[in-house]
Image 1 (cartoon, rainbow, N blue to C red):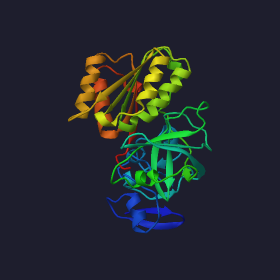
Image 2 (image 1 turned 135 degrees about the horizontal axis):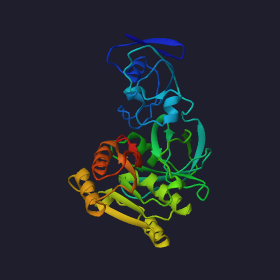
Image 3 (image 1 turned 135 degrees about the vertical axis):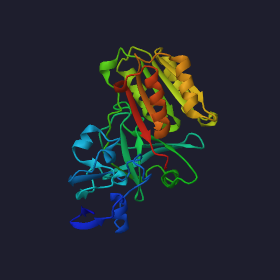
Image 4 (image 1 turned 180 degrees about the vertical axis):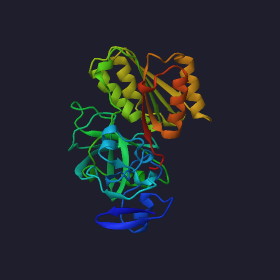
Length: 311
């Protein structure tokens, strides 16, 4: 039986139980969301012991080196000493704008007390409910932080977010992640595939690439159900301003994974030269990445920004 040390207290970990479950059973208040290692709301730091590779999947190499891990995915085999991370939501911000873009998509803009890049993600905290979202805005032209929130009837966080008004306070973490634009690849075609609100980080990334003078083609595929397309006017304006930017709206119906894979095969039968960014729900992205790899995409050229289905 492993032992979990947290805030100078020791807690026995039952075999097969996650670190998150162990601490929650002791009535310790911790933020969490999907409990499947995707939303990263429960992020913690291990200062002694090894949390294991599974508990660090989806984290940046820098975070892994610093001992960050996801307690919802960590079933320890040895004793661990863990703590709340410095990346917890400790920065104060204010809501600048809130727009219900569609019935399912809420756009929030809030002041930025932190440095950030489009494509990075950060944690938001409303009334002690915490979720991770990717950033769609591009500094310094856009000094605010913009996120797109998928709204669902059972979504606890999205329900709270829909109640926010201009001027309301919100807590956020520092921004992190390496799913960002690299100006070194200015001559390489970019293929951006966003599923639902996976459009957010790719919209920001595309704008940043164009502002940096990216010369090769940038193809952005927004894949979702027909009634869920959004930012159509902004994206078409971008396409008019920059001839190398191309917007593709892909309506999804019965089998999203197969429909995206088929679209790729028809339009890009060879992906060796493309640098791919995929953003959206993790199971779908993993399947699309596999299909892209079969079509010739190099593993090191595929960047994935996975979202939780819990909102």
